[in-house]
Image 1 (cartoon, rainbow over the protein chains, first blue to last red):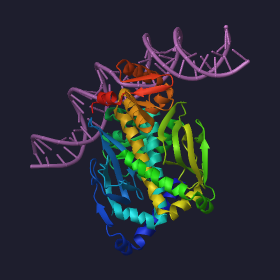
Image 2 (image 1 turned 180 degrees about the vertical axis):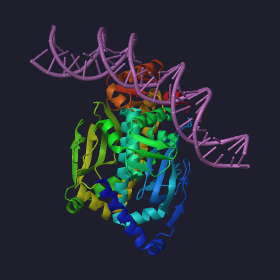
Image 3 (image 1 turned 60 degrees about the vertical axis):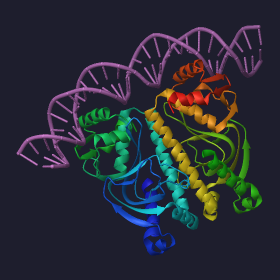
Image 4 (image 1 turned 135 degrees about the vertical axis):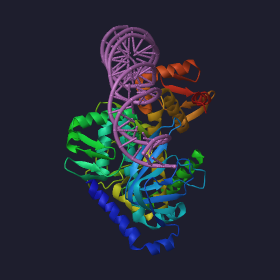
Amino acid sequence: MQSIAHDAKSKLIREFFERDMNQLQKDYPSIVEINVPKKTFLYRQGDYCSNLFWIKSGIVKLSHLTEQGSEITIDLLKRGDVTGCFQNNSADQEIDETAQTLGEVNYYRIAYGDFKAMMSHQAELAWYVIEDMYARRQRVERKLRTILTQPVEVRVINTLLELAEMFGIRCTHGYTLEIHLTQQEVADLVGASRSVVSTILNDFRNRGMLDYTRDQICINDAALHDFCGF
Amino acid sequence: MQSIAHDAKSKLIREFFERDMNQLQKDYPSIVEINVPKKTFLYRQGDYCSNLFWIKSGIVKLSHLTEQGSEITIDLLKRGDVTGCFQNNSADQEIDETAQTLGEVNYYRIAYGDFKAMMSHQAELAWYVIEDMYARRQRVERKLRTILTQPVEVRVINTLLELAEMFGIRCTHGYTLEIHLTQQEVADLVGASRSVVSTILNDFRNRGMLDYTRDQICINDAALHDFCGF
DNA sequence: TGATGTCTGTTATCTACAAAACAAATTTAC
DNA sequence: GTAAATTTGTTTTGTAGATAACAGACATCA
């Protein structure tokens, strides 16, 4: 069901942007398609961001750096998601998160004003954006809930399963993640300390629930699901 | 700045809905204005909700009940906020939160289909909704961050200050909250256990940072701000 | 006027995790 | 090819906060 919705989303995007890019750029001159390598920042915490970003392909990490110096990963965005500051950017709106690419990313960048105009002329698109924002909020709320109720073990499993769904490719034992993540990055994603995540991962490895090397994680999704008991 | 934005919001709403309600109801027959007393449920976790709710006045609590039986308060909505399920409700979308009124609430209820149509005909409104959803997501993200980084003490303070901003009325020492909240409700809002919140509140009372009786909380906002050191 | 139910205050116990620290294994850089 | 930097594995220690349990305070309703 998820994937059906997602296909519908990306279809809309493709049709809309790719069908007639020239005309679009005439109407909304700020639109540009941009291709960037991994680790690129779309915007940084503290910026005054006056653009919106529509992801065409790849994964973008949204994170926040706390005063204590620890990083929290808020969400991962993929094809079809829109991000940036939707508020009246005339005022001094400092954005409170950093958007950084994991892997290569392709996106459309649109200035706030053009984006807003686009939304008002293209009803389809506006609704699409509303749905996307709803989905994103739901993801954050789910994260909040698991952090408040589940122990780190379970959160690690959840995170891995989500990752597998987002960019896993099938392999013999389950899914292999296409993207390289350090233990620290996984920990930030889980919202836990690196050391605990490390021991948990080892524990899971010993039990045969997953396997990993320095630059690849392979997940036995069935075993992980079992562990949570559903 | 917050309040300016908020005023602009409610102005739009007033103009839109109240100016010509009759015409609106012709175009979108499902629209109804509803008035409910406190503790009413707009929808419950697990429902298949096919309506959207536009709050005209009052406060609505969004919460989630975990399997372990504890309640988590996700957010508080006030005038101008929109809630409900924005996803294709043809499919079996179980909603994962409960919306319950605190105090008396006045709202417009609109069926999914009509709402979607309305968004596509009224560009102003669609943008308004997008902004509202953005603001809501930011609130949830902020909550996530404070839970991950701040001790319960600080979270209690943050929560109280937010409450004061939402529905406090000025009094001699700072703000008095107009709404009755039990300690358990405060704890759910903070994301902590009731007993810890209780002792913290007492501690703060002894220090003169706030005062409260069974059915009223009075906050010395200056002192609370000081405590966090900013 | 009890009698029952909901709310508050406090304390004692227990545990999940963060923090710090360090050695081994790899990778990157020069 | 060696030095420096990063990543991993593990252990030790400290503590914030959950949980449970209970008594006192109020409220509600026969």
